[in-house]
Structures are given as structure tokens and as C-alpha cells.
Length: 423
Ligand code: GLU
Image (tube, rainbow, N blue to C red):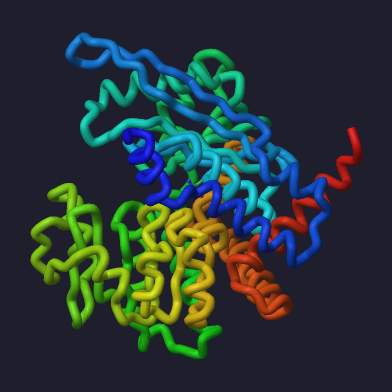
């Protein structure tokens, strides 16, 4: 009976890695991808599980499970963030690593893809505990990480503080190596513009998509699901461009204002209280209602699987721009395609983060630092070019922008694998 329940629970949550493979196979079928490339790209190069004994503040020891998955190094050193969340598991980290490979190939960065994670709730851990856990994770993976081999970065539940610990712990063994990790604080070799970068890319790709739909940004309404680093910056920058943000949400629920939310005010509330709860500038409603809102643009910027076959029929937005990785599971694709929705897929929409990470790494290695304006001037054409390429491929093959993005990435990766020869 227990087994049946466990199986049912597992089935209830679509596997992110299955979603990754399902899209990969659709794209591979369209371009008749050789079986050799399919086999190589559908399995990660290395999968590491580390068990980290860490002393807690109360004197007891707890073993935390961590992961690092290197999906591909065909295009260069593997690149990708580290996630701290209580739901992190290997399947999710494998999917996130695969998406990083495709994301970097799509925007043409000289990187492969990886992802890491530790199963823990950072909200219930003290700063000291988080530091000990992060240092233990770094020590366990210090032979995997390296500025020419595998370069971590922030993801959900981690930020500049954790990257600083990784940088320092790694440098204790190998000497000063700022390029081993990106998303560092500015004082330790971080890049200007890295914090807003992902939200900034979401804003830029949203504007490009709105234009393709023949709409004006000032005429569009938008709902942003998730108000972390990506969602809050995307909401702020989109509202600066004139879009009306009518709804935002975090784990405490959704917040709606027909006349438009003052995003800066909402960010102030978040900073003061830690959540959006009891935010006075909007009426509370549920996250489910937010996803089903009749808006022009929906930005899911929280976690995977918020749109699945169970609620895909309720989605009314004309345009979905995926700030999060994997917010739409593959079982929802056919339903959303049928509705004729335009979806800017995660590996394109949120690629601004890793693109600025790349410039951070370049700056660290050259010891020469750019202004925020220079960073933006370098990043914007990379994202616009990738957007145009995906949009044209979607027209050429008459497929969704998601499948088009996979096609562009696969073609580049397959060329790379082919050029490496047989060994
Ligand atoms: N975690 C971010 C992502 O999913 C950034 C990765 C990076 O900067 O390497 O794209």
C-alpha cells in the first residue's frame, strides 16, 4: 500500500528530467537527429551525490545530501547554479543541468551545462549553519569545480553570500581563483549588473515577443508569479517600460491590483517583512487564480511545474515568458500549443543571468572590470540575436518557440560533438 501511495505521489509531480527529454526528443525528431547525438545529449556526463556531515548550532550533527550534475562539456567548461530548497532531488538537478547546456549553446556562450543542489530549507538554517554547509559542499566538490572545468553560480535559495563562501573555500586549496564561481558580491570580483541580469533578460525578451505579437508595451497587462530575484526584477523593469503589472505573488499567495501594482513599493514591503504577506497595495488572491488571469503577459518566475496538463486549459495569457526554469511541464505543451499561445521558453527568457555570469568570468580572468552600461551593451545583442534566431526557427519549422530553441541548441551541440571526432 505504501508503495502504491509513493508511486501515485511521484506520478502526481511531472519529472523535470522527463520534461527535458520529451522536448529534446520532439526537437530531435524534427531535425532527424542522428542516434549518436541523441544518446550523448540525453544522458549527463557526470552525476555526483555528496553526503555532507555538518555540525548544527545546537551541537548535533546532520548529514545533508547534495548533488552536482555535469550534463555536458562539449562547448566548454560546465556552467550552472546551485539550488538550496527542501524539494531538491537528483531528477530536478539533472533536468536543470541539461537546460543549462541548451541555454549556453542557444545564446552561444563558450560553456557546457551543469547544476548543483542541496536538499535543505535555507529559511530554517542560521547563517553559520549555511556557511558550514556551503563550505562542506565546496570541499566535497573542489576537484570538480574549476575556472576551466565547472563554474557554479547562484540559483534559488543561494546568492552572493554563498558564492563568496564557495570562492573563499575553493581558494584556500587552489589559491586566489575568482573565476571559479560567478554571482559573487561586487567587492569580491562580482560583475556590475549580475543581480538584475536574469530579470533584465526576461524584460528584454518580453518586449521582443510583445513586438512580434504586434502589441504596444503600454497596452499590455502582466502577471508575475514568484517575487524572488528574477520575478521582482522582471516586474520592476517591465513596469519601468510601461507595462501594467496587475498581479504578483510569492509563497504566501497572489496580490492583485486592477490599476497596476507599484512594484517598487512591493519590493520595499518584501525587504521590510521578508514576504509579500499583508501587502497593502493589492488585494490578496491565490497563486492558481494568478496563473489563470486574463492578462497579456504571464511571467512564471518561481519553480518548475506550475503549469501542467491539470491547469493548462485555464491559462488565458496571450504570451508566457518563462523566468523560472521548467515552469511548464511537457504534458501541458500540446494544450498550450493548441490555444495558439506564444511561449518564450526558459532557456531563452532567463538566459540573461548566465550571460552576465559569463562576463563576470571574463572580467575575473582579465582583471579588467566593466561598467553596468558596458555589461548591458554587451548582453543585449546576445539575447536579441538568440531571440530572433529562435523566432525564425519557430516559423521555419512551424513549431513552438520552445522546440525551436531546442533545435537551435541541438544543432550547435551536435556540430561540436561531430567536430570532436570519434574517440
Ligand atoms: N542559475 C541561473 C540559471 O539557471 C544562472 C546560472 C549561471 O549564472 O551560471 O540560469
